[in-house]
Length: 131
Image 1 (cartoon, rainbow, N blue to C red):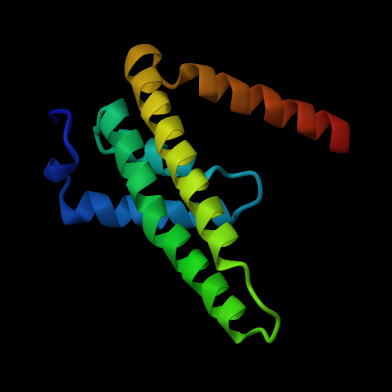
Image 2 (image 1 turned 30 degrees about the vertical axis):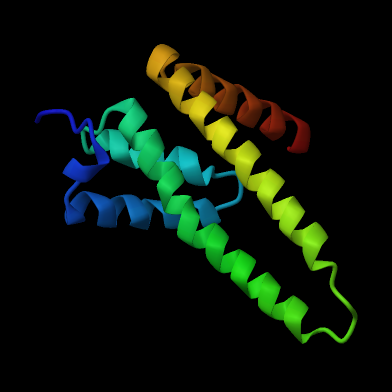
């Protein structure tokens, strides 16, 4: 099978199963982005495209959680500092964008192996410490 090198070349079948894999992040210790990138790689998607799609999948979840929190804030009787909230969201969005851009460049250059090694070693340390 040829490699998928652009998110516009994913078909609905790939996107559906990558989304289903995302649900595995409900298991404690499972990285949402890690599991979706792994699922993408299993479908023959190249590293940068799998990472980009994984980050795009997070947008509806983050937006939905933010909307729910805003609805809760609207309902409280206490005053809300909307300017500070907007400033925090803006700074968070800018830093997240910068982090994702740097991460995607890094993934394209060195691959995912360092992250796999980190996760395995960290998991083994946690198993040792808590068993």
